[in-house]
Length: 368
Image (cartoon, rainbow, N blue to C red; front, top):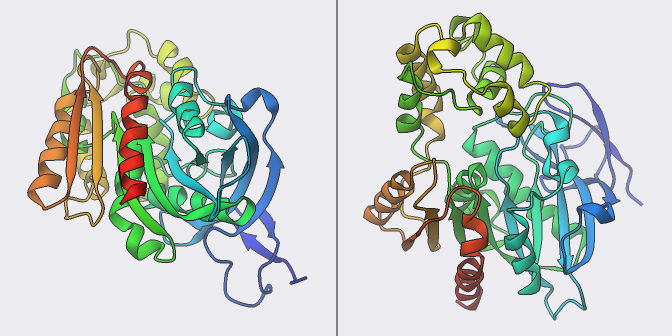
């Protein structure tokens, strides 16, 4: 049995023992290397689960260094087909950066379960990432397309080390996870050439950060409860270019501090009634700062070599027009892209409404 190597988790200094790596003085462990595996508690399992694990695996940090990310791997009930289960790398929606908010700890929200269970019923294994720094030591990197994509792709790599899953895979994501899935689709061929990426599905993805950031510049508008988390993550990924105290008022800084303890739903309750004018020293300037610092994380507009399918509820508070705009940009760049507006669905009801269509899209991708 090969010796274990001790991996220093970027930015944190916490040590994980990685089994099966070459040695402490050799090259760092490959991305996707499994650090640890534990059975996923029964109460966190989806209907139709055959086996499920919580996993810790090596990935690539926002700064290009090795890091350790957690997530889950779930396979359907029954016997794996020849060649292994078809596998989906899934990017969940943003739930906050504290470790307790990680999908592998908090579980699948009720409004997400219909999609996850539809995937299992259709014979797909599902590898879910918690994203960097959520569920593992250190602050998360927040909105960072490259780190999100790496975490999602490496969850698939990790799944192949612990379960009978195929080399062929597709990226699926919801909300911020849609952003992660689109980034994964853009970099899959170069980041993981040993896998066979077949396409990308993004439901209600968070895109067009420049336009979203402009909303922060309206003083009377309600504060987006996801914004205080940027007060914690941007100082990590943009050290020297962002200081929360230069952007947020004392009330805003209280919410930034609360973002270190609370998941999104609880932070939203805490921030109820708070406007941008209450939270920012200069709302238009704050919006401009966010737009500038998030510009590098816009979804890559290029010709993706595999199909992209997008869906967004027409009643979503995150405007469906943003996804429609992204679809148009990708199509103009030569991508095989399809966009479906889901009539009457909001940010939370869209997944149940679109689950059959997602399964259909995946069937087409895996049949190509």
